[in-house]
Length: 143
Image (cartoon, rainbow, N blue to C red):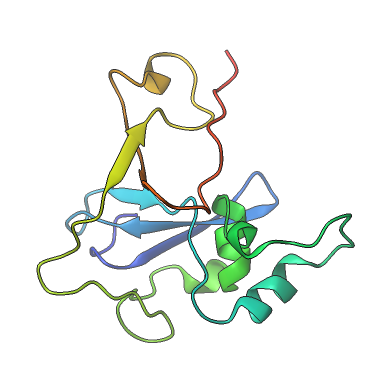
């Protein structure tokens, strides 16, 4: 999280899931963005095999391959060995055109956060693409 922008901060959370953050600040500044969901554009069969380690009642839909922080890491095969990886080179292929992207997005309260930090008015820090099918439903935090 304290590394250079454009790199991955990967950590193990709750003793069961890996999670990924995109480091966004200057070196030595702890700025990052949790990658909560995504669309698997290539390699859906590989992502599915990583996600289907246990028998399921229903087939795993493409839109659910990377729905939720732990599922994102699992679909992409990310582990602690990827902490610090450059997201724009090496094994990762994140592409942002010159000038960035102007995509319609929505904001809302953070998932699973209660108290003042979970206020949608004061902290609308959850962002998602308006038409993204992989974004999970909002779940409020427990007091």
